[in-house]
Image 1 (tube, rainbow, N blue to C red):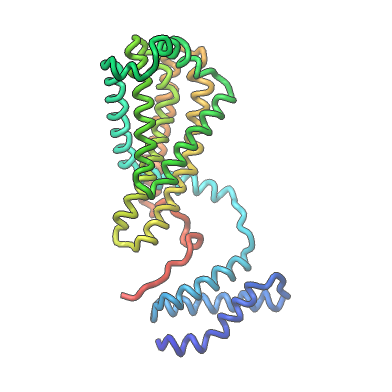
Image 2: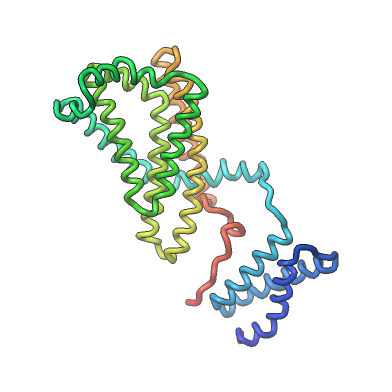
Length: 329
């Protein structure tokens, strides 16, 4: 294909399509013309991509076609089929793809938390940093348990706080160190609280109050941290893709994770708000925590494996992710 000659011959058609796509009002004849020109230009784009994939020409035609398609289809309205696709395919696929990252983050978090707890429980110097003896006694005997007062208001507060932490981990993932900082400070905080309770002989109370909601809540934070670090690693190693394309693909897929974690944290918030501080027997509370965590992992491993096997990654469909600029070679 002589691209220059082809471009000269087809430019009037492309310009006319762009002109119609930019108009606010179209007559019936112009609307029919827009459809015909859209189809012709789409064919032109396919021909250019196949025979002479010039990036500038491909980008130009892609932009014209995106504008024309928007003009033809109008504002996109979500449907229940898309909600179902998100819940059954995109979200589990995205979660499944970072499952080993999640496990690694969990192991590191638990290592830091346990080490901090042991240090606080066994070192008088570290324990002294937790406050005066009277402040420690107040926290151990009253404040820790009273924090989990049941109710919708408390559940909403917990949900908002944890969603913010998760968003921080995913949103700052490109930096690499900010997700690590957020995870590290939270691990130290949880570990220090456990160590303080253990030093006063109340470790059982700590575990009983943490387990019902904490199993799922902390897992959601691990997932958020894994998603953030996966974005950073994509920047370091794009895996044969251009760095910009890799970041766009993984960023969209992992933003799916961020949206999904809103629902996961809502469940853990409900457990924390209505189960943890309730009058239910402790075995029942812990069993609730185990059940919701097991349900989450079944969702990830079963639906996620199926979705990935079917070719899903968590990214948007190709027609909504944007056109890929072809390159020669």
